[in-house]
Picture 1: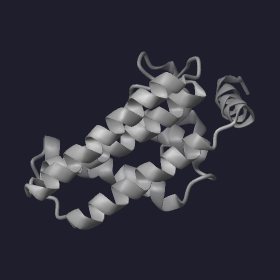
Picture 2: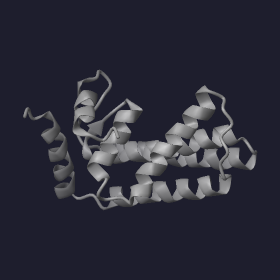
Picture 3: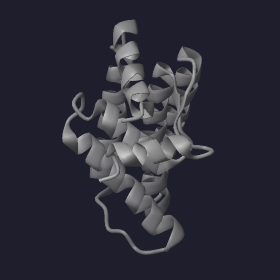
Picture 4: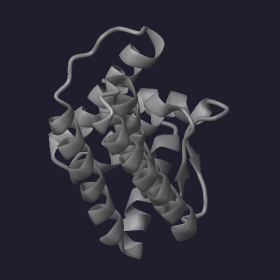
Length: 164
């Protein structure tokens, strides 16, 4: 698993890795808009029977929702694996385990279809439903954020930078 602290520390050392930023409601809203656009793209592609593009749009809908959450608490991460590991590290106790598994699986399915042109068999109806439920769960978390919770998450990030 990549959610271990040593991997996250590595992510923090990378040029486009994990960075603390100022929490931003506006940037979070912009990424939630991208999430909604990806959801629309997913639905249109599913209706057209374009499985590979449905899978890709599904992944990006989930990824943008997670990115919105992270920007809302003041974190930037441009490396997808680092973003996913950080999401698990920070929110692993706040979301059902299948949420994290779905995000990882979506990423892997996107890679399989986008880069290796391997046929991935998925139930498009299930993919649509899971993606909608995933993004709603992340929006629920964003809506429930208080300054106290944001500070708590920021402190977890600071803990990663402390020397043993």
